[in-house]
Image (cartoon, rainbow, N blue to C red):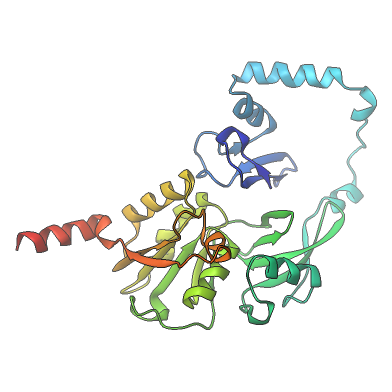
Length: 293
């Protein structure tokens, strides 16, 4: 992942990969899909970074091409071997046992002796090279993967819905109907450790917030706990969910001045829950009715 420097971000949110046509494309996971500057081709990227028109972007790429030694553009002819080499493939999925990944988890405040069943060690091949990362399965059958130097989606993106052993949440209707919505893996692990939450919707990027209402739609007497980052994209996602979630209760996680739950946990901050149901359209209507009665 790379930084969205045009948004002034300090956290990586931009992925670059080949699409089904083997074209290289980029995607800013910190911006909802379809929005301006949310992704596209190399020309779209130049237009975004340089804040220029299509014609200006083409001229800049042309000038860059002609300024480089021609030997750098000696491309091989496509053939079967190269197509196989570019394939992304999952090799093995297991519980986390790799020492480097265990060290990474420990550094982010997660004891390796208390890992949830849904967190996996994923070995995969990409561009002919073999890698391993932490991984969680997405609702579309792909993987959100995370390592100290890399986070991305494999095979299919989208949020991940995970569950496991945990404690009852006194503010909701029981574990079966409580979902905690977070942006990333370590936010989920932090809140699992702090509150004992057992069910999470892990977005993998705020752009996937648009898929959350459908995940709650079939739940009865549901409670949503929102724990999204304290940045513009995270707070815009919160406002989106407040308007569109159909649930009985909505709580926000207060992690003070910190950017996310994991940073708060690492800093020793006392995380708390705030009932924000009254901020939803139905909650505001109910509150107004109570005040007038």
